[in-house]
Length: 335
Image (cartoon, rainbow, N blue to C red; front, side, top):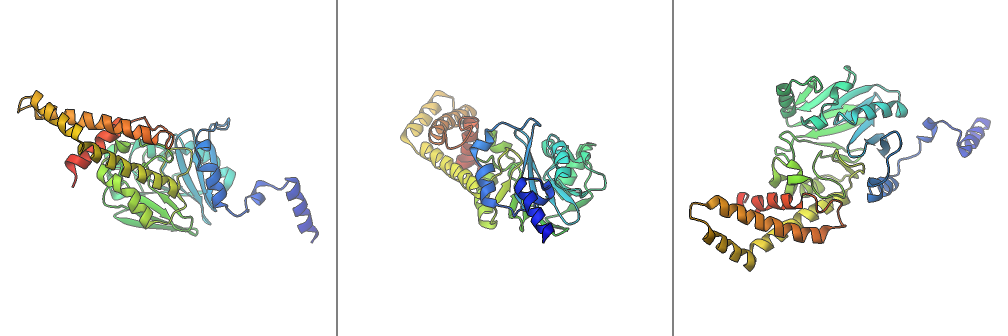
C-alpha cells in the first residue's frame, strides 16, 4: 500500500522514469490530431534535427524534415522498416531511448537508394527481408550499403516475431518503382505503401515518377477497400498519413480525370486540334501530338491549381507534368 501510494505521489510530481510513463495506453485520435495535420508538417524541428512519436502501442514513427521511417518493438526485439540512408542513423539513436532490446529484422520495401542505403548501418545479426524482385535489383547493384537480404520471398510473406505480425504482399503491379510491395500490420492497423502519395500535399512530378501510372491511379481505391487502417506509411513527409489523406488523394485523381476529359471533349480543344493538324504536314504527326499534350496539360493545370490551391500543400508544383502524365495514360495509352 505504501509503495503504491509513493509511486502515485512520484507520478503526480513528474518524478517517475520514462519507462513508467510510457505504459499509458496509446491514444489514436490524439495522435492523429497532433501529428497528421498541416500545422505539424510546417512546424519547426527540434534542435536535434528530428522528431519521433508513437503511432501504435508498440510502433514508432521517426522523421527528419521530409523523410520518415517506422520501427516496431516486439517481445523479442525491434523490427525496422524501409532503411533510408538519412533516417536510419536517427532511428538508431531513437531505439535505445525506447527500448534496450536488440534489432532483429530490417525490411526492404523496394530497391531505390533513398529507401535502402541505410541497411548496412544496422547490426549484422539483424535479418534482412526483401521480395524477390527487390533482391534481384540489389544483386545487380552490388552496393555494400544495400546488403543482400537473408530472407527472400515470392508473392507473399508473413513475419511473426515476438507477438508482432507483418503481412508483406507483392500486388503484381507497381505504383512507383519496379518492385513495390505493401506491408500490413493488422494488430496496429498500420499500412505501408511506400512512395504512393504525399499526405496533405500534391503528388510529386509524374505521379511520383511512377513506373505504372495507371495502376497508381487505381491504388487508393484498392487499398481503402482492402485494408481498415489507422495510419498509412509512405516514407516521405513528417506527418503520418491517414485514411482521410488517402481519400483526398483519390478525390484529386478523380478530379483530374474529370478535368482532362472535359477539356478533351470541349469544342475549343477540338477546334484547336483541327487548326494544329492544318498547320503541319501530314507526316508531322509527332508535332500535332505534342501540341495536343501541351494544350491539354496547361489547361488542366490551370483548372486544377484553381480548385486545389489551399486544399493541398504545393498544389502548383508539378501540376503541368502530372496533368501531362494522366492525359497520355487516360486519353491515349490505357483502356
